[in-house]
Length: 258
Ligand code: SF4
Image (cartoon, rainbow, N blue to C red; front, side, top):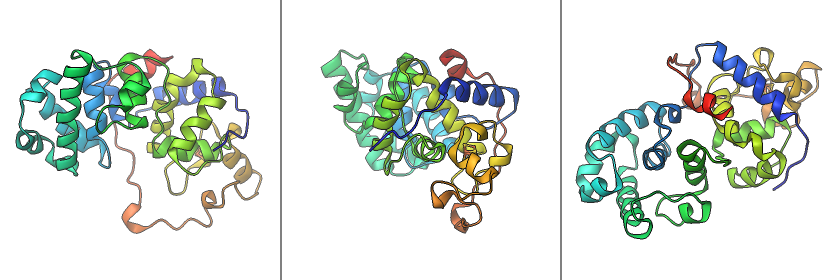
């Protein structure tokens, strides 16, 4: 795991913020679920290995009936499964949701904890989910790293890592703490729009001048990571990204983070 370069994070986050606020771009689902730490926690568990739209619908159904840890502990496994079915892995997720709700009640008096060690001690809560609760639930500095943040941080050339866990550690070293909160929402948004897993749209990118991959491509050189060379990328048909969905509404997370 390592952080390998300096980056002007202030400029990068300013440019991404201005770019995405000015357009009608697809937005990360957590934006609409922020501010209730319990719902952020459960929503993030639901979001694992599924599409944002599925998470949105399942979260809305689940929280309409069971909005608190106390109410969720009274629901049966089957009742929860029937509400979150479309997110996939619903047996495992329902088990984790019930167990986590129970522990929040018994060990933490019904209040979602605010530290990484306490959060990751809950069933079904890994580093990404715990960091999401800090950032989106409590507005505290955290570094949630999902596949978008991991991929883009490597393309930017600021880390050279193999796993999201390594990227989280490297970004904690590389990014000044005052910029931690907006890193995830802006990079996820970028990953869902221009900097997708296949054929990143570097000529349209507002941060290409700060990005090792963008700089290399613009000067005719191969990007630092061979897998980011558009001429060599062959998308798998099953993984071909869809055009960005349009979204509307205020950007609460990013506004709050800035
Ligand atoms: S320049 Fe290309 S690789 Fe770099 S962040 Fe922008 S879209 Fe992604």
